[in-house]
Image 1 (spheres, rainbow, N blue to C red):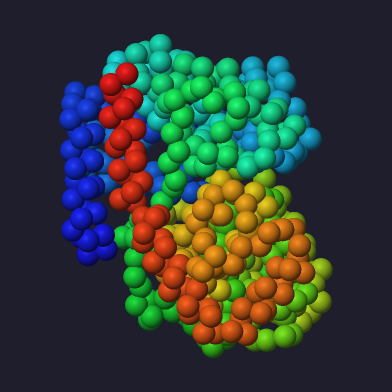
Image 2: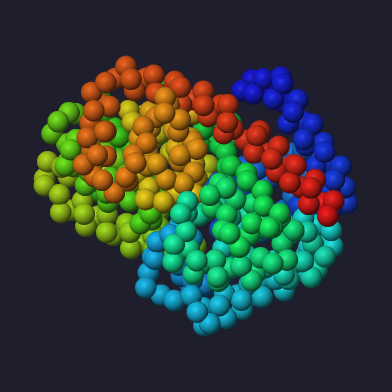
Length: 442
């Protein structure tokens, strides 16, 4: 009520009641590939809790798979974004392994899912479960959180792999209309944008001394650190308390272009002002469905080591522990709140939760004009880069903004209001409630 106001709270209660009536005697299931690391897992931790609190019996299951399966689905992930990723194929052998892993998961799920239950499958890792669950009598929705605005040979290859698995789904959900391939134009397609939860550990208010304590624990600010799994992998100790910090928080993923952020900052910001850069990602051991994480982190460390000494001194690479999701979320929260500027220089992006998270904290944002980020950042509430690969443009933009503190404050204020109006979890929950009502009637 305090965040949403009476009118929005009433709409949320009304939507929840409608979904509750539609699901009498049935359960709602979410199936995903991991319980930690990345935006899907973060959203599910919160959405599942809220829906259960509303009196709707909701379950969340994480599939069991091997390294070969996740290598294949990472290939799908990259190609759905329109980039090749690795040089591997998506042929008959890959299709056979993908199906066999999901058949073994389906054998377990069909003993738990009842006819009439509604099952929401998340992203390419779970699409192959659809026919098995439809055969059980469930209503199945596939939720695709990723995509590319413009199709190319890579997206077509990925869709050719996935489309046969989607034929029996009752509905398919995307984050943007531009992500929908032509082959699904006649399907029951819904567009539901992701959201952030303002009351979650990652987004709720933190007192200044709590922010400082968390940054000390991470190793970004000086002080006595307790034992933790956080590792500052690049840099010679913590920053000074008065340093202005530019932050990017994301997975260690080529599409997040951490190396580009590092190089653009080193070339155009270091030496021109007192700003420092923190590249913050998860401990790679804690993200099981992303086999490229260790490789990308190693590449970032090598790029940092290749910088001139002065530039190295102004950059830190941080790997946050994933063993406790609440602690991880609080560390991200504190890092974003302490930042003078938050960047998200993705080369492709399905949505980009970190953009809305930073804007909710009144942090000014510089981000790439790609995918769902375009929808999150209106012209008066942040700065979008037309070409995310232009490191000169990126570096000059960051430097110019840091020289205009009043504009940073104004961008942050307008950004918070935009997120409040469009990207909080009440809107997301209402969208899902309408979807559930619709699918339950089919």
